[in-house]
Length: 284
Image (tube, rainbow, N blue to C red; front, side):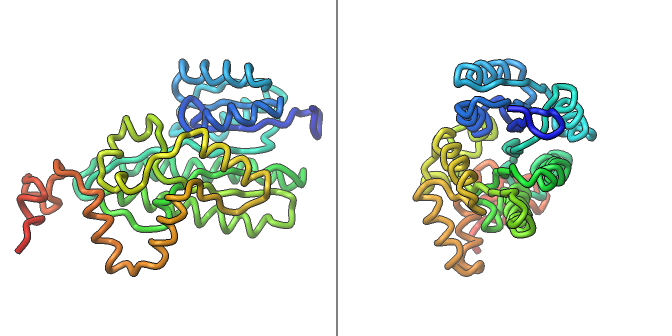
């Protein structure tokens, strides 16, 4: 299908080489349109493109590190060069670290902010004006149940996902009469390389929140977006977690989250160089 100005509408997916992004790309391929796959891993992008093609879609591959300062411009240029226009933007690329904020590397923590907040915001605000002008399309932003609460031992990650949820809700309200949909998706833990590579699953918190499959999250996200929903919380356990955290006072909730997410190997933030549990974590 050719859209306005002779450009073909496309679904643009970041983090498309694996996990939820790749699952969403496979899903939207069923609609037999153009799907732009953005990621850092050539092999993963190639596999994702094959899946999109097999599903009936038309894949376009953009191997790109989104933390490069001009990445939104590169995405825009890639679309123009291929005769495409961003009809739906799926911001699924994300990054996390687990540990004490005072002892984790500063650059790595700022990298979470750059990818989870700055890049997501810049891409969204780059393409939303065109959607408004065309009176259609929209954005799917991947947040997390982590976005509903502060997260000791994953402080910057939780805060970044809180931003995504807040930003998406505000944008949804601003655009609700323009024909443009903004949907925020807030899954709990998902069985992806994100958990395996970052060792996040080792936290005891995830014994209480069973991991969802990327396919289940993708189905919920796309169905919710097509239905014009502002917020999608996939999975019963995630819905229960959101309800419980909303009803629990922070003075009670914060120590519980900290205890569940604390890793035995974490060093004490006091700078002693000792393990937290053998230093300031000792009971008086």
